[in-house]
Image (cartoon, helix red, strand yellow):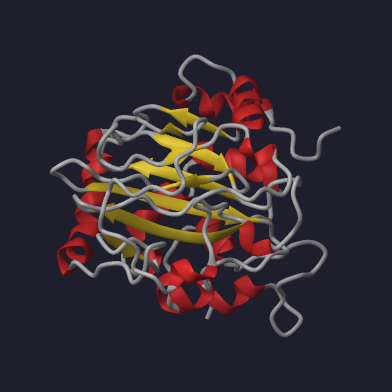
Amino acid sequence: MNKHKMASADEAALEPYLGGRSFAQCWEQYEADGYVIFPGIMSEEDIERQRGALQPFIEADIRGRNVFEGVQSNRIYAMLGKDPVFSDLIVHPLQLAFAAKELGQSCLLSACLAINLHPGETVQPWHMDDDHCRQPSPRKALGVSTFWAIDPMTEDNGATELIPGSHKWGKVELNGANSLGDFISKGSDDQDVDPGAHKDAIKAIMPAGSLMITKGNLWHRGGANRSDKSRLIVTPQYCPGWMRPLETMLLAVPEDKAAALPKRVQELLGYSIHEPFMGYVDGMHPGRTLAG
């Protein structure tokens, strides 16, 4: 029996988001292509709540430091340390179902950031979100990345670009792939310069309120924003319970703020145990530290 098999009651709770498909059909597409899209599942009211909470940090207009972050982009980190409203996206049942099936119930929140691409932004280097694990390919995904479209993702505003099926590749030398130099270089401001153009790449075009879920080992990148408006997404990412998250959540979210969050969010931040006892504090469950 699959230890990550979903209970029928849990699957029934996901039906409103599946667009008439079964969870098994959605999972089959995710396994085959490395990603799956659920169009328009967030209400307009919820979209505006997320946008409103992000607005002060967007208005601060702190731009990326290098070509990977995007020198014409805002990246907003430590989101749960800024506003608890973001927990609504982090524990959405649909993406947690994928994360738990792929990574196990003890999975952790590895990163959570908002990305706002301004007009003029160029393409990002190709990368895999779980590449920091430094494990040879082909391999099982060691992460699940999700992308919430707060703004529509369109043909010309920098929609995330994907190479379907690339999670099954072995070691490749991909033109335009991320390198250490991309964390230093500011790159070119010429949107017509694209060393990573790939014949099999597609754009994840989807309306506001949509959710895309990808395997951590799928090759993808942010696109160039050739429009006259910015493009905003929120991207929670997950890793197995035994793996170090990209963002140190226990420092990113102050303890007093973590104590006020829902229990499942606390678990994803690291106030949890990966069986039999990984994650303990002074020999005890880390959740006790929030009990005061």
